[in-house]
Length: 301
Image 1: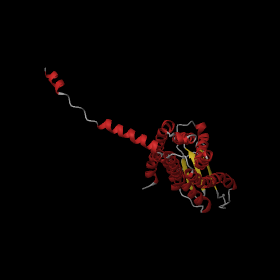
Image 2: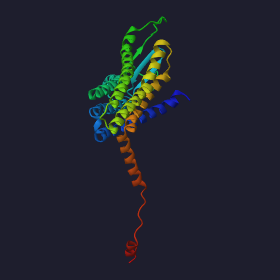
Image 3: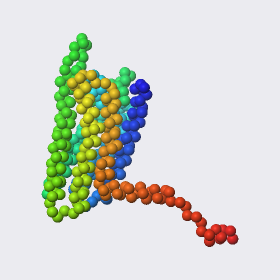
């Protein structure tokens, strides 16, 4: 199977995952607003913000339809005017907006753990040859360019630029693990205190487990593939195109699955959805009542 065969399949899966993720997050927002337990307090505003950001990120993804190109020591994020409805003059800005949203998604979960800890303590596509570089928007890095005479040099501008995203990656991972441990200890300490109801204790552990699972999703679908791309481009100088396409797909997988831990682990949200689907199923399969004898007799008469 050639890349021209599986790329359209990849693109369809990407769009489907993005739309599905936006729908799930749009469903999560009213659940948080109207069905959150009272003990959730201020933390629900952080949850609303993250769900709204994921919807915004999904919109940016659908509008820009970015291509990730990786080959050798190069890595670029490009917006092709043939794939997007964005006007030509805005394409470069749209590419910057996507990259900025992507950077926020890298750091947001470390911040979420830190926010959760403070709440607890308060209680207590393809780069083809026919593509015109003057018409597309692109951002990226070429670490080891080759001069006309065949000499390979180090592009320090790319290294300085990529150091920003590397810092975000490492800081986010450090914040996640550091505050995850502090959240665990703070939750455990809070549960040891007298005067808390059983429902309150259960909610605090549900929030912690949901946050842990919600953090594993971006580590798996974003930070993992991104680290592989950095390793193959910077260290090995031997990246290949499939990695870029896989990263584009994995980002949409992240958008599609990110809200699931919150929905299915928090009991109030889970029960609300189960109750809704049960009612919908009953309405759908409810048999039509047979006409009574009296009505039949009246029709005959």
